[in-house]
Image 1 (cartoon, one colour):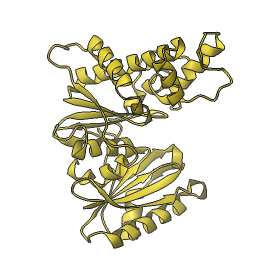
Image 2 (spheres, one colour):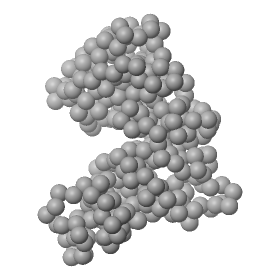
Image 3 (tube, helix red, strand yellow):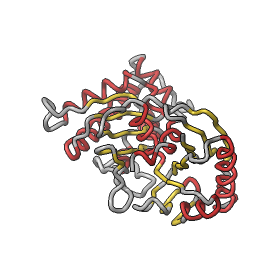
Image 4 (cartoon, rainbow, N blue to C red):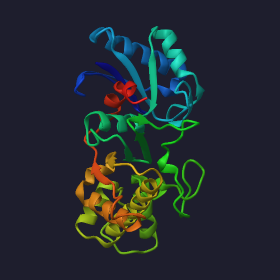
Length: 306
């Protein structure tokens, strides 16, 4: 039994997760980041205390953070959504709660949820790609999370692919997430529409990634080209990661994974075309099991993978 917390830019979700990965109790509070670090910390403390009253005394506490952690997992080095820079979150929470707290990147938490109870269960080495507004990632090798010497080992969204027509929010040009995220998909379609490419998508339509996938399935030429482009870069990225660390399996999560096999089969085809040893080192590529609850489930089970 564990307590898992998933901090988002809009809400902080907390759950009591049993040994089967089922959330037995769940609570939610609004993320008041505009009121500063101390307010969010206080809300976290109150939420955890409430969940503690409903759980066994020995329940561990894990927290998924939408940002970069120090290598020792104690300090939030950068978390733009909360305006946190170099905050000693672990120490501050443990002082307030008088118990041990574990921190993890939110995409890595989702990766742990899949490894413990979902699509990559039973595999000792796995990689997760979370496709949403950006691209997040988690890496597990020999049943242990890989965070690297400086805590940034799973920042797969910022692998440089090639030059792109706009810069990433990180300040670089060519990051994977500028090719293979919901944002990338929308911006590419908007650019091509502005250039006069024919499509059923309208320049003044407030379309989102779901609308683009619907149009692609209906064989709209621009939408299909945009989805194929996204799948191509994901396949390249998976092939690069495979050649480097050779994991058994990749799992695709995040909002774009709702496109299902339509996207998955395209990614697989692109991966095969770029792998150095496709005949005997082709990783399995699957869709993630968990959706919005992945962060809580993974955070609650962090202790098993560090």
